[in-house]
Length: 110
Image (cartoon, rainbow, N blue to C red; front, side):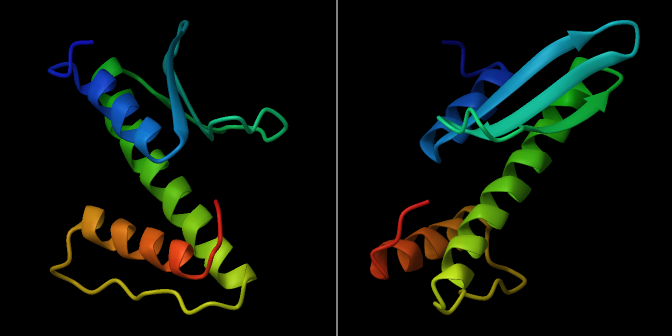
């Protein structure tokens, strides 16, 4: 796998969190992006279109981050657990790690 390729790097990052990212040419309008939790075959994937592959990769990254964040927050909220707050200056990855730790601390799974 060529990690220098931004699409492959994003897909690898998404896999670490249990997500799948698909980029498909969508003629004639550009590229289609699909993001979904792995193994969630009954759930419709989140979708977005972009005119170029580069823009599709950026859109896929934003969509993946939002889907992951929503899933973690929803899991904690549904269990009545406190959701760690994000503060300016905290890196996105650190915030996600804090959310994951809170999920594990409460014995929950996403």
